Length: 427
Image (cartoon, rainbow, N blue to C red):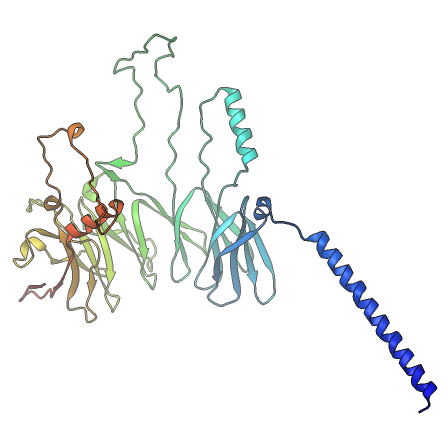
C-alpha cells in the first residue's frame, strides 16, 4: 500500500471520528438541556396527583380483575378488567369489589363524593349566610351489583352490609337505619325568649322524642333482604341482627333481636325450599354467639345466656344444633357441673369442637362480679381516681390498665366430653 493511500485512509478515519464525537456531544448537550428543563424540586402539591392502588380482587375463573385507585385528594375509581379481552369498566367512587363464586356477578360500594376544601368552605359560608343551624344531611353508601356478561346493573341505596351465598344464587343485605330528623326548633318547643329571660315549658308542652331503635339496652335488629340474582325476586325478614349462609348455601341462619324480647333468639331458613318459613331453634331474651360447625358440617355449637326462670343467675351455656332440626340441645351448663370453678364463667370466645366431634374445647374467665367489687358508700363524684407510676415499673402507665385487666381475667382452658353417662370437666 502506498504512502498516499495510507494518508488518505487516516484522513477519512479522522473525519469519521470527529463526526461521531461532535454528534455525541450534541446529543449529550440536548439531553442535559432537556433534563434541565423538566427536572424540578418536588413540592407538596405534587403528592396530590400520586395515586395508590388497593383492594385487588380476582374472580374465581381468573377472567376478571378488579382494583381501586385513588389520589391523595379527591374521588377514586374502581377498575374491572377482563384479562382475555382487555376490556376495562371504570366506576367512579366504586370501592370494595366482591365477585360471586361463579364469576357472573360483581358487587361494589359507591361512596359519597369527597369534597374539596373549597367545597366544604363554600357550604359552610352558605349555611352561615342563611342563618341555619342545620348540618348537612348524612350521605350514605350505595351498593351496585353488575352482571359481568351483560353489564346490566342495579343499585341499592343506604347499604349497611351484604353477603353473596356460596352458590351465587342469593344476595343478602341490610340497609342503614333511617336517620332521625334534626330540627333546631322542634315542634311543641317554647319560642325563643329575649336575652335575660328564661324559656319555661311544662311537661305537657315538651315535645315527645322519637323512639330509638333500642329496647331494654338492646340494639334492635333491622330488615334483612334476600334477593334472587337470576329472578330478581326478594324475600324480607324482620328484626335481624347477624346472619350467615352455610358453606353449601342450603341454610341461612340468623339472630333476631326484636321489640318483643321473648322472641329473640337463633333461627334458620331452608333456602332449598320455596316459601319456607323461618324456624325458631333457640329463643328467649339473652345473648347468642358462637356458631361453630363441626368437622362434618352437620352440627353447630351455639353459646347463649338466655333467660331461664329455673336459674337465678344467667350464665353462658353451650348448645348443640343439628342442622335443620327445630330445636337445640343443651350440651354444657357450668352451674350443673360440680367441677367447673365457682368463681369463673365461660368466655364467649375460644369454643370449638374436637376433630372427631366427641369433645368440646372452651375457655373461662374470672366472673365479672369477682373482678369489680364496688364501694357503694362513696358517691361517684367523690371517688378518688389516682393512677400512680414510677420510673422502675416494667411497663409505662398507659399500658398498665390493659395488662391488669388481662391478669384479672385469668383465662383458662377446659375440655368437656358431653356424654350423658359421664359429664366431666378437665382443667
